[in-house]
Amino acid sequence: MHIDILTIFPEMFHGVFSQSIIKRSREKDLVTIRMIDIRDFATNKHKRVDDYQYGGGAGMVMMIEPISACIEHLQKEKTYDDIIFMTPDGELFDQQAANRHSLQNNIMILCGHYKGIDERIREHYITKEISVGDYVLSGGEVAAMAFTDAVVRLIPGVLNDETSALSDSFQDGMLSAPVYTRPSEFRGMRVPDVLLSGNDKEIENWRLQKAIERTHERRPGLMDKE
Ligand code: ADE
Image 1 (cartoon, helix red, strand yellow):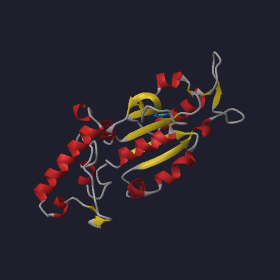
Image 2 (spheres, helix red, strand yellow):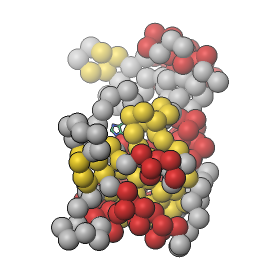
Image 3 (cartoon, protein in one colour):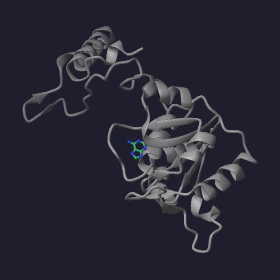
Image 4 (cartoon, protein in one colour):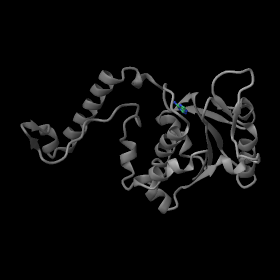
């Protein structure tokens, strides 16, 4: 898989993408990720990427020229399965969407800032708009990191134990069962006996039961989602 992220803050990604699972999947060449600085495509004197909005109002708007130049430059090199714009008014991102995107080859992600991006970009280039939650972030970068992390870990071969992605919360429409590690007792708090029993069938039943209870308690409605 290849992911191109268009941003005016490429440095924001360096820490997150050079640690843990994303780091390993990049090293194994299971994914290539590039951060592309939109400012490099600004042709005006001061490399400006934003301007006042027509009609007045507070907040600057990201200009069409540098973004369109950047997108068209990349499109000469690759065909993208999706050109995604991160925005709070996009489709809510969930595990099913992560699964679908993990099957794609080339993804472009555009991160917005300020008051937004010129609407003509959304109309002419963007194939999908994604929100990571009903709250407003300062820009699309943190959303793009969340999207990338959720998608990359699903690429076959990225996780050492492939079943661990399958037993993630949400993967079967349920939250995960609680997990414990040593010691078996800490200040009187004991790990449930069944987990120490060695009885695989009983452990499996217990985990399923706990996952159902937790899902009903915390996220009623999640199991009705198709
Ligand atoms: N940009 C700002 N807020 C966002 C959100 N909630 N999801 C995706 N992109 C965003």
